[in-house]
Image (cartoon, rainbow, N blue to C red):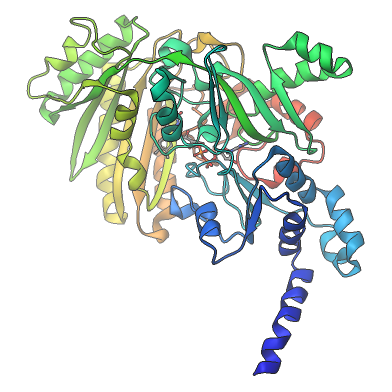
Amino acid sequence: MFAILSLLPALFCAVSAIDPVLSTCHSIAKALSPASSVYYPGSPHYINDTSHWSSAINQNSTCSVEPGTADDVSRIVNISTPRAQIHTVLTSARQLRIIGTSRIPFAVKGAGHSPNPGFSATKGVQISMVRFSAIAYDNASQTVELGAGLTWEQVYESLEPYGVNVVGGRVATVGVAGLLLGLSYKSNQHGLAMDTVQAFELVLPNGTVTSVTTDDGDLWFGLRVCKIRALTCIISDIRILDSQGGFNNFGIVTKFTMKAFPQTDIWGGYLIVPASEMDALFDAVAKWNIEASDPKAAINTAFIYAEGEVMLYQLLFYDAPTPPDDLFDDFTSIPGANNTATTQSYLSLINSGSSISLNSPRALFQAASVRHFTKANLNIIAAQTKYWGDKLTPQSATSLFNVAETFLPNMFSHSGPSAYPPSRSPTLLPINLYVAWTDPGADKIMHDALATSGKNMTETGEALYTNYALGDVPLKAIYGDNVERLRAIKRRYDPKNVMGLAGGYKF
Ligand SMILES: Cc1cc2nc3c(=O)[nH]c(=O)nc-3n(C[C@H](O)[C@H](O)[C@H](O)COP(=O)(O)OP(=O)(O)OC[C@H]3O[C@@H](n4cnc5c(N)ncnc54)[C@H](O)[C@@H]3O)c2cc1C
């Protein structure tokens, strides 16, 4: 018995010698500074690092890594590339046959809220950005530096005492990094969350840590004359590739600097509308789509399937303690509607809408897209909610809803071209389709149902919103005519396709 036990370390070394992923984990552990750590199955850190909002996408990664500095991210990226593998090969002749041709899969996880398989989960090396959690508000420049491992709840909590805010997510637990394309309650005023980013700290696929700013061209010129041309190029390409819908195609972001805006209490909450008043609500939403012009106001309409019925939750939001008189009267005067909208802090509204975070055994999103919400397409959304709710509930669906998100026609005009949307004029209005279920055997049924329902609700030719789309929609359906340009930029900045080892939409 003791003889067998004494052999275990040797056996472990032998396994590690023949498993290139495990061997890479060991190499990473050796290379990292004390600010970072590698974890293995059984460790509580490993469990957190490999857990995702939808447990359906969790994978048994060989190890997880929590880098604590951008330099350590660079070391990890380098170790996963063929160049670093050659180094590993040289250190052990036995590994030559195995590692020489292998490329180690990895995944980058912000807060793990993408429900798409493989987007932030892997059987290889799971990188968790959780240690990038610093928040620094600079009053003088009215900017906020945000670590790429933060959630929006952490951001709003930290900024509340300063009376400022950023354009960010609408659900507390979602990650800053993954959402940054995102749609916000403040988007009518300032555009997509990404339109307000001032700078990125980015680890490029070749391991170079770079700070990219749009504002400091002269400073960059002064500091690194020979690189200015390339950097200008990187700035525009990163805005296109990295987070304006490109996710991890272009490297790993470690820090964002965002514009800060003054934040008072807001007025907002849900109007719960009885099914019998569906017509009145659709009239109000369709009218709002034509007439609304106040950028401080935002609405969205949730169609929630519940026991054979469609329940209607109408979000009303105004970015001030009280909305102008009469602004929401078409909604609040609907007979029998229960109005929960009230004056509260931004954080309190975000937290009240975050219960969805708890309801995610297995879950998927899909996107649909229209130009305007009309009474006709709102009726289609209601019919789709009922149809798929009836059909999927017996297949173990526990929750199903569609949310029609209304924005002003000029919402995309706050910034220039980006990967998504393929065109910034006019605004595309997303519908967020969602289903959660329990039976792993129903995974394909749920996926296919969302794909079909999304098609049924999308106006022909309209681009799908990246943050909601299923993981296997064609790139063209999201990025339209930008796809070729994105592929060309990808070839230029990642010729070895390092980021191809991480999952997600790939150019
Ligand atoms: C409950 C819920 C509410 C949501 N609400 C909104 C909303 O209000 N508005 C909206 O627009 N979207 C919303 N979404 C969609 C959400 O924005 C996306 O799912 C987003 O990708 C989640 O970001 P994350 O960091 O949590 O996810 P992750 O799964 O960790 O990451 C998503 C993708 O980004 C990549 N990524 C993560 N970190 C980095 C990094 N540092 N560098 C490079 N790539 C990185 C990952 O590799 C992955 O491909 C919501 C999703 C959920 C589940």
